[in-house]
Length: 427
Image (cartoon, rainbow, N blue to C red):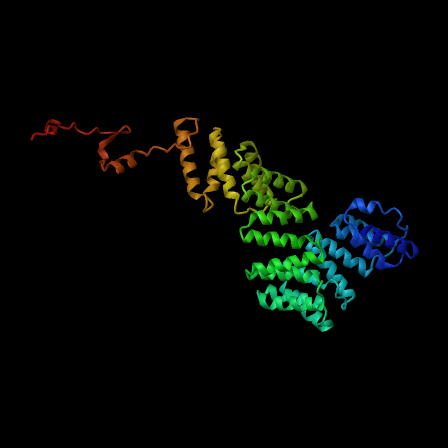
């Protein structure tokens, strides 16, 4: 039936290439690039670029969508409101929130009564925690048309940013009464139920979003996160896999998949996921430290040292923000350098360990051990080695005391010989 619908739409477009309804319906039926390439009988018309923008957005090919938008703007459609809205949506999909925010603001300045992008704009303001701008946008949309589902979505985000999740759910429900297939409201309402720890209702909302659009990766990802909160890692693995299939180059989906594999005690699979996340570009800067930890768990010393060292170098060069796990990287590297008789490097990393609460005691122990190795001249690393206490510590432990004249040339005066004659016990 789908093939028949596609062929009928293609005939319609050949008869009238400017009929946008046929283009938009056809875009929703295209599932992949291979299917798109089979449509060789489409009319050669400038409207085809609008169609390609829509298809690339549906399949999450954001960079390709930007190329087609640029091609249309080069044709003379620079200030076209539709293209501005599409450009904002593409930058939002790429998580380029600052550019998307500026584009939305530009569009609303040109057309203040335009409401088809205000829900996305409110999401951006929510992520940027711009409460003042979100407050203004909510009041503005209510004044324009308070009975639009987009307006209800903006007001819901407004209440959500102030932690009034119950009120936010009320407005998302109102949006769904106006439009039961309003995808954004289903997903956002699921987020609110997660905040309220009502996981059953959250999963129900996400499932409704999937029913509306099975290619909405946010709903799949939301169900995965909810099952992860419920410690049902086998379930969340399936939903993360679906989200990653829809967004194959999104490192967040790949890292979430790797974390699920780790919790299911499948570190080899997790290692592949983290490697993949690094290759596609780690958006949250967590794949590298996770990869190093998995290598440590797999007893892959070479891999662990490589990724821990790279992570530490990037943190020191300010390329990455130091996370909570940086202290464990210092600790592992300190032990590694000590085992390999690289005492200077081991000492540097051991002192770094002392700066963190989690590894402070381990760092102090490592510093003492490194100092003892240097004093003894021993290059052999013994993880069970405990430095010998100094003379004062020995005397304190034995309960003895010394006088200023009892030490000479670093030696203590030997105790007087004891009389053992009384040790023979008589009955």
